[in-house]
Image (cartoon, rainbow, N blue to C red; front, top):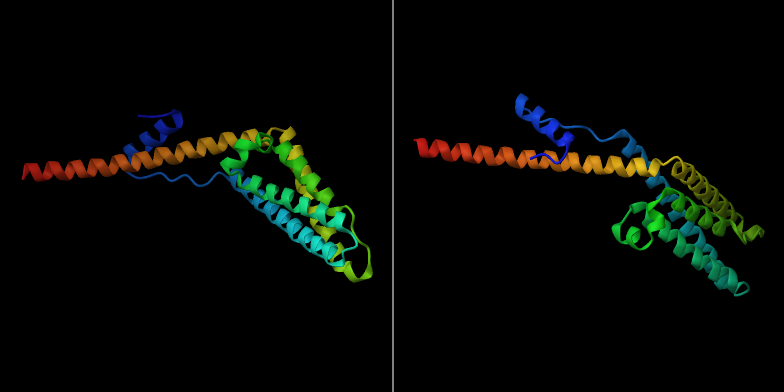
Length: 193
Protein backbone atom coordinates (compact mmCIF):
# COMPACT_ATOMS: atom_id res chain seq x y z
CA UNK A 1 0.00 0.00 0.00
CA UNK A 2 1.81 3.06 -1.19
CA UNK A 3 1.20 6.60 -0.04
CA UNK A 4 2.73 8.18 -3.11
CA UNK A 5 4.97 7.41 -6.08
CA UNK A 6 8.18 7.52 -4.03
CA UNK A 7 6.89 4.87 -1.65
CA UNK A 8 5.92 2.60 -4.52
CA UNK A 9 9.35 2.99 -6.12
CA UNK A 10 11.14 2.15 -2.87
CA UNK A 11 8.89 -0.87 -2.29
CA UNK A 12 9.25 -2.14 -5.86
CA UNK A 13 13.04 -1.78 -5.89
CA UNK A 14 13.49 -3.40 -2.51
CA UNK A 15 11.20 -6.35 -3.20
CA UNK A 16 12.59 -7.08 -6.67
CA UNK A 17 16.25 -7.05 -5.68
CA UNK A 18 15.82 -8.65 -2.27
CA UNK A 19 18.06 -6.02 -0.68
CA UNK A 20 17.15 -2.99 1.29
CA UNK A 21 17.81 0.37 -0.29
CA UNK A 22 19.03 3.04 2.08
CA UNK A 23 18.95 6.52 0.70
CA UNK A 24 21.39 8.89 2.38
CA UNK A 25 20.32 12.14 3.97
CA UNK A 26 19.29 14.99 1.69
CA UNK A 27 22.32 17.33 1.31
CA UNK A 28 20.05 20.37 1.16
CA UNK A 29 18.47 19.46 4.50
CA UNK A 30 21.91 18.82 6.01
CA UNK A 31 23.03 22.32 4.98
CA UNK A 32 19.82 23.78 6.43
CA UNK A 33 20.37 21.93 9.71
CA UNK A 34 23.98 23.12 9.91
CA UNK A 35 22.91 26.72 9.32
CA UNK A 36 20.23 26.31 11.97
CA UNK A 37 22.84 25.08 14.46
CA UNK A 38 25.10 28.04 13.64
CA UNK A 39 22.19 30.44 14.14
CA UNK A 40 21.26 28.78 17.44
CA UNK A 41 24.83 29.01 18.73
CA UNK A 42 25.00 32.66 17.71
CA UNK A 43 21.72 33.37 19.51
CA UNK A 44 23.08 31.60 22.59
CA UNK A 45 26.15 33.85 22.39
CA UNK A 46 23.77 36.84 22.31
CA UNK A 47 22.02 35.47 25.39
CA UNK A 48 25.32 35.19 27.25
CA UNK A 49 26.43 38.68 26.23
CA UNK A 50 23.11 40.24 27.20
CA UNK A 51 23.06 38.42 30.56
CA UNK A 52 26.58 39.70 31.30
CA UNK A 53 25.56 43.22 30.29
CA UNK A 54 22.41 43.04 32.42
CA UNK A 55 24.39 41.86 35.43
CA UNK A 56 26.86 44.69 34.91
CA UNK A 57 24.05 47.24 34.62
CA UNK A 58 22.24 46.00 37.72
CA UNK A 59 25.47 45.67 39.71
CA UNK A 60 26.44 49.29 39.14
CA UNK A 61 22.90 50.45 39.73
CA UNK A 62 23.54 53.41 37.48
CA UNK A 63 21.66 52.15 34.43
CA UNK A 64 18.64 50.10 35.45
CA UNK A 65 16.90 50.72 32.12
CA UNK A 66 19.80 49.19 30.21
CA UNK A 67 19.54 46.12 32.46
CA UNK A 68 15.82 45.78 31.77
CA UNK A 69 16.46 46.24 28.05
CA UNK A 70 19.06 43.46 28.20
CA UNK A 71 16.57 41.15 29.94
CA UNK A 72 14.15 41.63 27.05
CA UNK A 73 16.99 40.92 24.62
CA UNK A 74 17.68 37.65 26.49
CA UNK A 75 14.04 36.57 26.21
CA UNK A 76 13.91 37.35 22.49
CA UNK A 77 17.24 35.62 21.84
CA UNK A 78 15.89 32.57 23.64
CA UNK A 79 12.89 32.72 21.31
CA UNK A 80 15.32 32.69 18.36
CA UNK A 81 16.91 29.52 19.74
CA UNK A 82 13.50 27.89 20.18
CA UNK A 83 12.48 28.89 16.66
CA UNK A 84 15.60 27.21 15.28
CA UNK A 85 14.62 23.94 16.94
CA UNK A 86 11.36 24.14 14.97
CA UNK A 87 9.54 22.87 18.02
CA UNK A 88 5.87 22.40 17.15
CA UNK A 89 4.67 24.32 20.21
CA UNK A 90 6.56 27.48 19.22
CA UNK A 91 5.54 27.31 15.56
CA UNK A 92 1.92 26.70 16.59
CA UNK A 93 1.67 29.92 18.60
CA UNK A 94 4.02 32.09 16.54
CA UNK A 95 3.17 31.21 12.95
CA UNK A 96 5.43 33.98 11.65
CA UNK A 97 8.47 32.01 12.88
CA UNK A 98 7.58 29.19 10.49
CA UNK A 99 8.58 31.49 7.65
CA UNK A 100 12.22 32.30 7.15
CA UNK A 101 11.67 36.00 6.51
CA UNK A 102 9.93 36.24 9.90
CA UNK A 103 12.79 34.45 11.62
CA UNK A 104 15.28 36.71 9.90
CA UNK A 105 13.50 39.85 11.10
CA UNK A 106 13.45 38.53 14.67
CA UNK A 107 17.16 37.70 14.47
CA UNK A 108 17.99 41.17 13.13
CA UNK A 109 15.94 42.73 15.92
CA UNK A 110 17.80 40.73 18.57
CA UNK A 111 21.12 41.65 16.94
CA UNK A 112 20.21 45.34 17.09
CA UNK A 113 19.14 44.99 20.72
CA UNK A 114 22.43 43.28 21.54
CA UNK A 115 24.43 46.03 19.84
CA UNK A 116 22.40 48.94 21.27
CA UNK A 117 23.52 50.93 24.30
CA UNK A 118 27.00 49.50 24.46
CA UNK A 119 29.22 50.93 27.15
CA UNK A 120 32.55 52.04 25.75
CA UNK A 121 34.39 52.23 29.05
CA UNK A 122 37.89 50.82 29.20
CA UNK A 123 37.07 48.24 31.87
CA UNK A 124 34.40 46.51 29.77
CA UNK A 125 36.25 46.52 26.47
CA UNK A 126 36.10 42.72 26.18
CA UNK A 127 32.35 42.71 26.79
CA UNK A 128 31.82 45.38 24.12
CA UNK A 129 33.91 43.36 21.67
CA UNK A 130 31.85 40.25 22.46
CA UNK A 131 28.64 42.25 21.97
CA UNK A 132 29.83 43.43 18.57
CA UNK A 133 30.82 39.92 17.47
CA UNK A 134 27.53 38.38 18.63
CA UNK A 135 25.37 41.10 17.15
CA UNK A 136 27.06 41.12 13.74
CA UNK A 137 26.99 37.33 13.53
CA UNK A 138 23.27 37.20 14.34
CA UNK A 139 22.67 40.12 11.98
CA UNK A 140 24.32 38.20 9.13
CA UNK A 141 22.26 35.09 9.96
CA UNK A 142 19.12 37.22 9.89
CA UNK A 143 20.01 38.72 6.52
CA UNK A 144 20.61 35.22 5.10
CA UNK A 145 17.24 34.11 6.47
CA UNK A 146 15.42 37.08 4.94
CA UNK A 147 17.04 36.57 1.53
CA UNK A 148 16.32 32.83 1.72
CA UNK A 149 12.75 33.57 2.73
CA UNK A 150 12.28 35.86 -0.25
CA UNK A 151 13.67 33.12 -2.49
CA UNK A 152 11.21 30.61 -0.92
CA UNK A 153 13.99 28.37 0.38
CA UNK A 154 11.99 27.71 3.56
CA UNK A 155 9.10 26.38 1.49
CA UNK A 156 11.52 24.11 -0.38
CA UNK A 157 12.95 22.90 2.92
CA UNK A 158 9.51 22.03 4.30
CA UNK A 159 8.64 20.08 1.14
CA UNK A 160 11.90 18.14 1.29
CA UNK A 161 11.35 17.40 4.98
CA UNK A 162 7.90 16.02 4.18
CA UNK A 163 9.39 13.89 1.40
CA UNK A 164 12.13 12.61 3.74
CA UNK A 165 9.57 11.77 6.42
CA UNK A 166 7.44 9.92 3.88
CA UNK A 167 10.47 8.02 2.61
CA UNK A 168 11.51 7.05 6.15
CA UNK A 169 7.98 5.90 6.96
CA UNK A 170 7.86 3.86 3.75
CA UNK A 171 11.17 2.18 4.60
CA UNK A 172 9.91 1.44 8.11
CA UNK A 173 6.65 0.01 6.75
CA UNK A 174 8.57 -2.11 4.27
CA UNK A 175 10.82 -3.46 7.01
CA UNK A 176 7.79 -4.34 9.14
CA UNK A 177 6.15 -6.10 6.18
CA UNK A 178 9.29 -8.13 5.52
CA UNK A 179 9.50 -9.15 9.17
CA UNK A 180 5.85 -10.19 9.08
CA UNK A 181 6.47 -12.14 5.83
CA UNK A 182 9.40 -13.98 7.46
CA UNK A 183 7.22 -14.82 10.47
CA UNK A 184 4.47 -16.15 8.20
CA UNK A 185 6.98 -18.23 6.21
CA UNK A 186 8.26 -19.76 9.45
CA UNK A 187 4.69 -20.58 10.48
CA UNK A 188 4.06 -22.19 7.09
CA UNK A 189 7.22 -24.28 7.43
CA UNK A 190 6.15 -25.40 10.89
CA UNK A 191 2.70 -26.33 9.60
CA UNK A 192 4.20 -28.20 6.63
CA UNK A 193 6.49 -30.33 8.83
